[in-house]
Length: 477
Image (cartoon, rainbow, N blue to C red; front, top):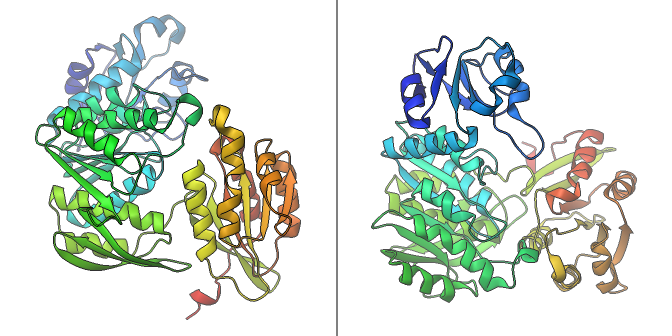
């Protein structure tokens, strides 16, 4: 059997002690007793809401090969008869294991951060590198103090390419995470007003994102967005840190990985990119100029870690947007259909504008409407009123005539929109959900965008449950 970790290596890395009859090794690592696979180790992490030690018995019943538990929690486990590795603190032990995984790996490592586009860029890199070798990448948005060490701990020793997403809500959060990951290439997708309530201004956000450069290996590379107003700040930081290789992407004539042109459609687009003195025509399976911009950064990174570029370019043509990040659904209504664009995972002013542009570019049949369903952007602090009201201009410029809003902060946008925009406002997501279910009509294109914590994903779920999938006209053969 092929093990992710032998038990002896596991104990050595975590500084643990054995209890019970331990297996020779484990096939995987889980922190969720519900999704745990047979032969995996269950790490009983104590989170903000639940303590994994309370689910140790369920983990064993579901096939866990062993438990990793805290010394202080042993009395609470009672008479549980199971193989265990006992450690001082389970999360600290997982951090040590993640560092050991990085130490034993010869993989080329790419780390991604930024205010917008982290997960999309990470998934793009995963998709484009798969034809060239064994790829390991973080699941979903596992980008925080437990997600990064968990992803590292799960990285097989024979991995060729490791891709890690690194996020933050405050300063000093990226620094310890990138210290574990130690990337060969770091990407900062953009700097925008995300988590603005925790910072004084965009320069403070840029400084926090710049922490990713501190963990680069010697002779490492950073890729920065040349079109972003914080580029100069980031470049100066990279120089001060002694980063060996500084690259840029964007539409600027000075960009190393440059967007020459982009044409978008409802279901995809074409990117013309100038890279290494060549202009490439690149079909893209996912729609949106912001997706094409992130593709430039991904292509730059791929060129630096050295796989088959032709295979990577071909993979972009089959890239599809993910759930909550632009995934499209054609749903049947009566004898016709409407299109749902799911952007409900998260939101800040920059990603809102990108989603509005996506809706603007969507093809709408005669009689159909472009409808923006928008929920509150969270963590905007004292800037909340102005950034919500500030969405009026891009909506008007995009010609979006139907805007449906939910949430107390979206009242600022309601007041800022002109009278020629048809606005429906509800204080709660569930009230707007009921309105949407009875008001969407055939031919409509509906885009739903909000911060995840608002619950606007419930509107997406309700539409998917109420209306069956349909093959639209563009899918018929």
